[in-house]
Length: 377
Image 1: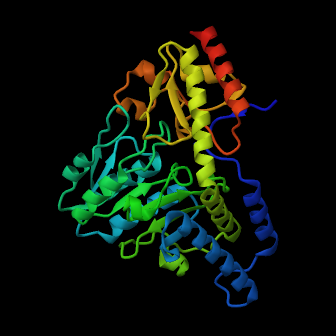
Image 2: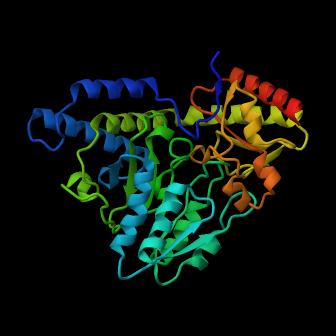
Image 3: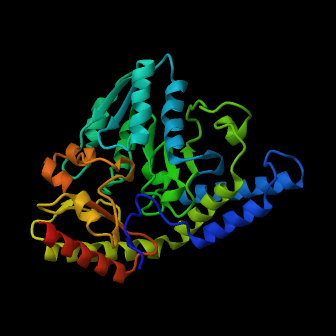
C-alpha cells in the first residue's frame, strides 16, 4: 500500500482532467502562438482561454495576467521588476521574517548587489504581521512591500486587505506571494487590494514548471527576461502552451469546486487534529487557530524530533516544514521567528491535505503517527 499523502503544500498531484488537457495540447497544439497562420492562432487561442481562466479565479482582467515558468520566477519578476522600474527614485523594500526563500532571495539580492535597504518585520506567535508595523516601516523611499498571503509551513493567513490599505494610502505597491492560498481560500483582487500576486501551478493541481503573476494595470514593472514582446512585453520567450493551458484548466476547476472542496478538507483537517490531540498530551498547534489555510495542520509532538518521527512512520508522506528546506536538522526559521523554543520547532510536523484526501486516510495517518510517537517519546 502506498503511503498516505499529506504533503499537499509541497506539491499537488496533477488533476486527471488537467493532465489530459496538457497531453492533448502536447500532441496537437504545436504552433507558435505568435505566428499568424492557423496553427499559431489555435495556440494563441489556448493562451487566451487560460489567461481568462486564471483572471476569473482572481477577479482580474486577462491582460493583467503574466505567465511565468514557476512561482519563484513570478516572485522575482514582481520584486526585481518593481525595483528596477523604481531605480533612481526608491531603494527600500519591506517584507516579513517568515517569507518563502523565493521572496527573501530576490530581496537580499537587491540589498547585496544593488545596495537596496530591506526592512524585515517580525510576526507574532501565530505567525501574523501587524498592519500598523507595516505602515510604520514604509518610508519616502519605499518602492515595494512584499508579504505572503498564507504561510507555507503553518498556514497562517496575513491581514492582506489591511496591509494593502496602508500601502495604498502611502502610494506604495503591494505584492503578495499567494502560492499557497490560490484555490484554497478566496483570493479576489478586489478584496485583497494588492498590486501584484503570485500564482503557482503545482500548488493547485497543475504541473510543475508553470506559474503566473497578476500585475494591476498601471503598476510599473520592468521585464527580467528580454527579447520579443511576449506577455505584453513583460516576459520574453515563446509561451509553454500545454502547461499554460493546464494552469488555466486547474484554475477553472478550483473555481468551480471551491464551495464544496474547502469545507470538506477543513473538516478532515480538524478531524486529524482532534485525533492527535486526544492521543498526544501537550501536542502544540503551530499557526493561527482560525485565520489559517483550511488544509494545513502544523503541530509539534513533545519529546521527539519531527524529522525522526516521520522517518519512522513510512506509511505517512508529510514534511517537517517547507519542502524547500529539507535535508538538514536545523529547526524551521518560520517557527523560530514566531518565538517558539528550539525543542518545539524541532518537534514540528506539517500535515497538509488536499483534493484526494479521504476520511480513512486521516484516521490511518493519525493512528500511525501516534503509534510511532509513543514508541519514540
